[in-house]
Length: 113
Image 1 (cartoon, rainbow, N blue to C red):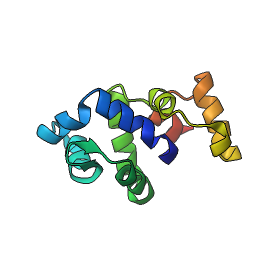
Image 2 (image 1 turned 60 degrees about the vertical axis):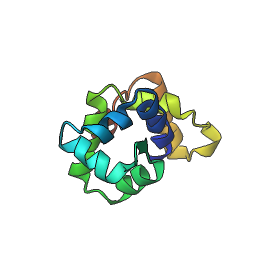
Image 3 (image 1 turned 120 degrees about the vertical axis):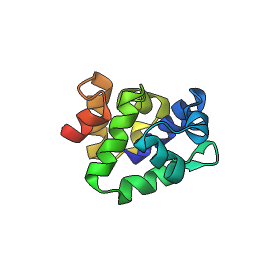
Image 4 (image 1 turned 135 degrees about the vertical axis):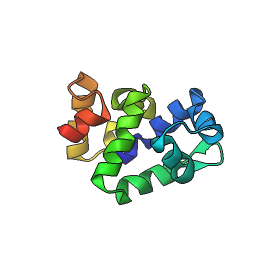
């Protein structure tokens, strides 16, 4: 999931979502993003990766569900991340294959897999 963080950064930036969250967070997840995942108006890949490592599974699930709900699902994020298969472990390549073939499309799909 952390290797997809760059794709999340691209989508958050191009959609201006990070700026909108910075200016006017509208829900609990956006409050969390503003406080913990932004550097000013910019999404922080480093902070997202840190959150993946430290958030309890339920809170991480809620955050990832938020991204799914605002059209930042795993399939799109993975595509924008432009990850080279050579940079992935064997297990990560398996999940990449499932994402690319459409078996896993959302963060929730991944969590439930």
